[in-house]
Image (cartoon, rainbow, N blue to C red):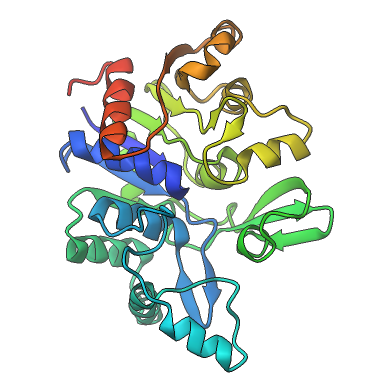
Length: 306
């Protein structure tokens, strides 16, 4: 069975890694959000792509979920000592990724090809694709005006009150060729437990999910709170009580199956009323075995033969 996983952020990377422990490279393709990409110090940074790739390669920092394991910070500290910007940390190992990506983009290579080559170098056998080879930028509308996503998320630490989102360039951007082809040939789509507003919606604004296929989403909200990131805060500020039911409503009309944590089992009746099949299980992924277990349950839930 051929599975497409839509992912962004640490939660998405964890489930993608769980799926990769079960499915062969021929059975799994991961399409990653690039709406939070930006330029910093003249370098092209792809936070979600790198988080997913580093996680699949076993290179991710296990404490943060992002960045490289055993990282050092000499370059950014040296730049800051000279008056440079240090609100976005770039580790020394991580800098190598951004330097080579930027060089190749300027030479005319596509982000898809660069990502594929990087994955080969890191020993990642499963296909990891950006949602588009063209730039799409997530813009966060706040009570202090519009902010580029990294300005809101990292520099301002999600402090401004969110009033909405838009995805600059999404109307003109085309899906990465291999991404759309993979979606068309997929047997099922898995929406990982990523932030719906800023990790999955950018993908959905660029890529069309084909009708007639099973689409399962895993809730990133457990017991009314996000495991990591500002999703719950965003829901509250938009006037929506954060819950697994809110996530189900967000994806209503797109998904056929929905996976929630056992803590949210009291919401099953309300979610089932949205005409989607629902599974309540343990979705908290504290370690590699948890990732594999959750992935296995998701796949069995949608009838995948694993």
